[in-house]
Amino acid sequence: MGILRRRLGDALLAVYLHGSAVSGGLRPQSDIDLLAVVGSGLTESQRNGLLTELLCRSGRHPAVPGGPRCLEVLVFCRFDLARGDYPARAEFVYGEWLREAFEAGESPVPERDPEYSLVLAQARQEAIALCGPPRNELLPEVPPEHVRQAMRDALPDLLDGLHGDARNVLLTLARMWYTVRTGKFVTKDTAATWAIARLPGPDAMTLDHARGAYLGELADDWQSRAGAARQVAGRMAEYVRRSL
Image (cartoon, rainbow, N blue to C red):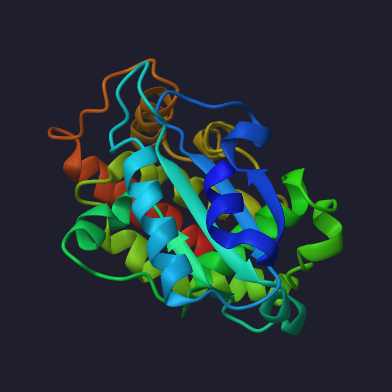
């Protein structure tokens, strides 16, 4: 949080901790998820300074046991949050999936993405204020229709990322399925447990492997499970689409 205070200065209105750290406890590969709200748009200097420090502070993926955690930091402008547009607009985004592009010289810029609407919806439900007012004073209540549209729009890119990120994709699909059926956000392993009980045997076993790898109980090995991962991913994606 010191990086955010130092780089954003008086523009910083609040910092919220969300994700695994507050919803069910950090798992071996869980990121530290931070969401900041600022009172005005960031300057290029602020973005670049924030990026430089995060590249140094964030652990590389996959995180090394006992080493620094991967950081995920999203910065939203209060004005944009108040407008409630879809998809949500972020002033700044940092995550380890972006490291390669940033280290190659790409600069962070404001952007809109359906995923940011889902992050805001989940943060509104569970986030803890590290500084600033409680979450319901600054974070918007994302309409259910925006949540459903965000899932619909995010599905293609999510499925495209299956190769090389099977565990995360399968668990995210399970969480989408749970959320669209219940209207609530839960941890990935909780959603997986719920989904396993509703899948046929072979698919349930594949998802259970993803759950076990997420919890650190199994090796995160998908080399021999690529076909099975594609099958259960397609099945859960279809269940999500039918429920939207």
